[in-house]
Length: 414
Image (cartoon, rainbow, N blue to C red):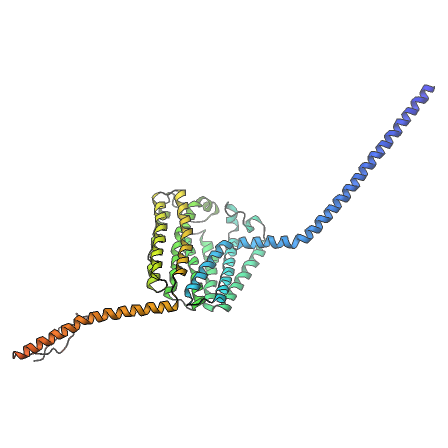
């Protein structure tokens, strides 16, 4: 019996130890769970507090980035640069810095609105292209109503700013350019390859906008930079269309490069428009916009981009197209810098006009010298004939004298 008593005591002792051990284990687990819950709750509380503190800053960064991408800020800044150059060319000896800043600000706002509207109309197309699928609208980072509100508000504000600080002509050009880009050029990209030339018109208007903001009217010598931008955009975009032709085909855009498998027509269009840039330097000098040095510099850089286009025409490869694209990127800032550096102020233009008038006077006086000598010879002949007793008949009309050779010959009185 004593053996049974010992066995029972051992069993009860082991069970008690197990219960105590399990209770200890359970207590540890409960404590750890409680501490875990407390730590996790404190961490979540701190995270929520940090998130609440950083939430406005994160929102500002998020939407600021979306607005930046919707506006295509780099392209818009290029538009602003061309508009500012046009303003400087239209200014006289002194540039109105306040007017320049207001014009650039309004141009930036209108360009941002046009680019945002462009992306609103092309959400489905951008989602199919690798180059554009990460934009704010296709990626869902911003809603469509939010983008519409942004585009419309900034466009109206930019146009109103130009009308207030510049003039109504400048505001009208900005508004018409926005409509042309967003509502004509954008849908035309999916209809016909002529969209490239319509887009070139859109790109040529901003420098004219800057000119009218400074001068108040459109003049012939203010068309130098718009013409340069129009012809420059064609080779620039032809190179881009050739390099991204597969992407444009996936997006459903009708570009000239898609129907040109060999690339010959694309390269020929680029080369032809590069050659159209050649006389612009001489016209800028002849119309009194710049000095004669710009004529030389413009010819050199135009021949350089034409050589790149000709190389692409001879060897239609991706490498040659990329070289022409890089040459076009280099051409525009050099051309605009040359215009600004060699531009003539009002005093210089008046001096140039005086010099040209003097040259005209000298040439006219040199032309009158032989006429006067001819009159002297005629008088000598008349006196000689009168001395020998011949009757001299004076002409009634000198109608056959230049510049009227088509009139009848002079008649003589009896």
